[in-house]
Image (cartoon, rainbow, N blue to C red; front, side, top):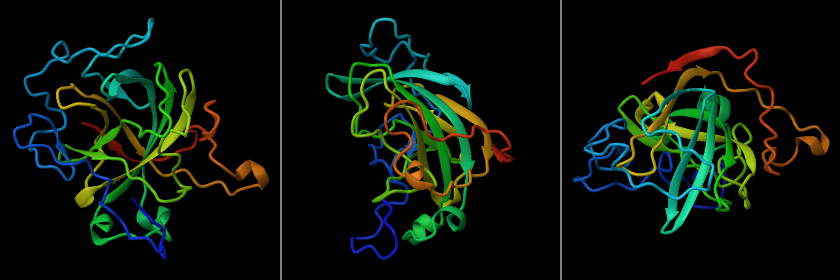
Length: 254
């Protein structure tokens, strides 16, 4: 979790809000901070038919495991939050941005490990297609770095205007839609090569690739219209402006 400079709280935890390590016997991906040695695209001995199916509402058709999508494409996915509780989402990855600490993190405490990472923003549109209120939960997306390691999104102790919201609002009920922006710190100057949905080690990941853009300029607040979380209300508002006029600064590819 990142905190602003001068906070009285204990400073930063983990370089990229990293996942806990898995056992060395796992056949799954490397996870930043973990101990496995397989690649993020590796599926071990599992196939799509081997992965247990999860219950989804009638009429919902899940995207095939292993789908390789482009930025702008939508995947419909299901994942288990805990025993007997399933989340179902439409996930549209809209934009990949490569930023810098100098440009986007002024005033935030950074330790040396974090300073040695590369910061990225991933902008997405999310629709709750299931029966579970996903309020307050993390968005189940990772990035894959140049070493085929999965990196989890970073959380913040307070608002981070360059890229927010990074989690679901307090209530995110079935049928609601929101736009979100996830911050990733790729360790050891790692590159963003793909965005990945991979809820379990056995799951053949669904990935998105596309061009890396420059960060969108922040819009200064103008009265009440500039305040609050534009994604709030679950109507898909906020993060306006589309991709018009954006200049690529690189590319992300497997």
